[in-house]
Length: 182
Image (cartoon, rainbow, N blue to C red):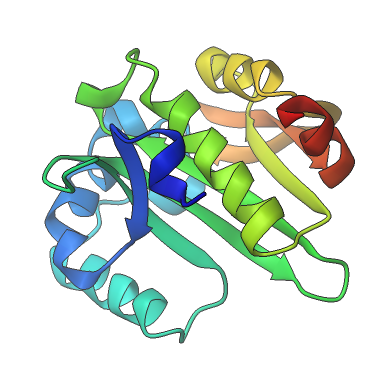
C-alpha cells in the first residue's frame, strides 16, 4: 500500500524548490516559529529557503523532507521530515510543521501517521524520535496520542523568543509501531 492509499485526502511528497514561497511564509510567521526554537528567531529570505530546498531535493543534505499536501497535490499544508538519520543505528528524528490554516483539522495527525509508516516500513528505521518545546501543548498531545514514549526532558535547552525553554524528547520503536497498526 502506498503512502497516499492510507489517507487519500493528505499525502506527503518530496519537498521541491518551488515550495519555497509556502515554506518561507510559515518560517516568517511568529505564531508558527515560536515553537521551533533559535534557528527561526530571525526572518528567512526566500532565496535562502529556495536554496535549502534545492539542496535537500538534490540530496546534498541528509534526511528526507516532504511537503504535506492534499490528495490532488494542489493545496500546501506544511512540512514533514526525517532528519539526522543514523544508518548504523537505523534511527531518525521526525519534524512536522503545519501552516496556520491547517491546524486543528487532523492534518498533523494524518501526516504523522504517514511519516511513521514511511520511516518504519519504507526506510526500515528501528526507532523514530521527536522533540518539541514543553510549551507546545498541541505537539505534546499529538506525539503522545500517536503512541510515542516520553523519554526525557532537556531543561532550559532551546532559546525561543520568550527565552530558554525545556525540550521534551519522544521515541517510538518499530515493534511499538507494528503493535499499534496490527
